[in-house]
Amino acid sequence: MNFNVTFHLSYKFRLLLLFTLCLTVVGWATSNYFVGAIQEIPKAKDLVASLSKGVVLGKKGTVTDEAFVEKARLDNCPSVSPHLKGQTKLMFKPDLTLEEVQAKNPKVHRGRYRPEECRALQRVAILIPHRHREKHLLYLLEHLHPFLQRQQLDYGIYVIHQAGSKKFNRAKLLNVGYLEALKDEIWDCFIFHDVDLVPENDLNLYRCEDQPRHLVVGRNSTGYRLRYSGYFGGVTALSREQFFKVNGFSNNYWGWGGEDDDLRLRVELHRMKITRPLPEVGKYTMIFHKRDQGNEVNIGRGPECCV
Image 1 (cartoon, rainbow, N blue to C red):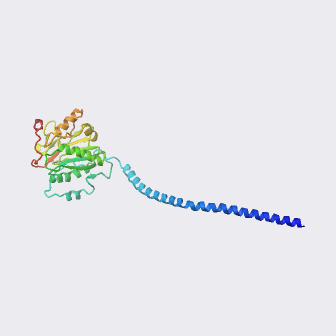
Image 2: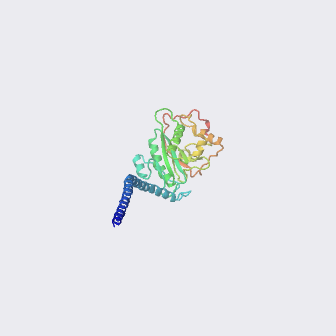
Image 3: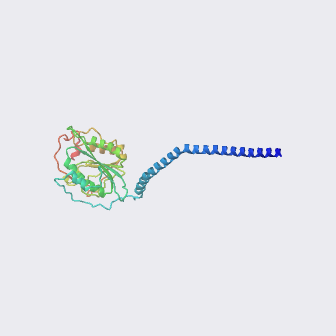
């Protein structure tokens, strides 16, 4: 009987010991789990923060993507814009101000414009060498902005001003303008434009072709005839590749004239052919002015200019 009691107590004791041991093991395992979970909380916060950043970036990316998609949805502009008017009678208001020009062109920002209804076929930079011709510049800008917009161009106008009183160097200004404009945009086409010539007919398209283009066939001061055979001045259009190929203008022409004839020779030496619009299309009004001091005729200009 005593043996049975002892055995019974011993059996209960062993069960109690085993149960206690199990509780200890479970408690240890549970403790490690919660410690591990507590240690992981900062990482969870980081994850939430990362997700938050992702949402913000996603929102920005969505806007950008939407703008990109919207631009991609635009069809190319037609080769001939439906907004063209043809020959236009030009008027020059004596008291025109820059504020008036800006008010008439609300969609132009810092000289830049692109059509909203379609994707322009070319990105065109207009380079205007300038000194002492503020009124002429206003007249040109007043007419040139709507002229270019009717042609549905993605364009930028650059006015390159020569400071000081030394002789004017049109060619060097245009070379500088070309390089500076390329810092803003990879332009497809460059229009080298005198400040005193205003286009009369918007069928005279300001864009580049597979050959260099001379846009001034005639002007009012010459009875709308070409100034002389081989004339390549006033307003010319060369693509980025064409201008690079001829190495730009020569910087050696100080004063009036010579640089345009030099450019023509460079074009011809590279076996390119100059093209022009029809005479009734390539018409310009030259705004009257006296010869500026510092822009005297270049003595190195050949007699071909006067033929």
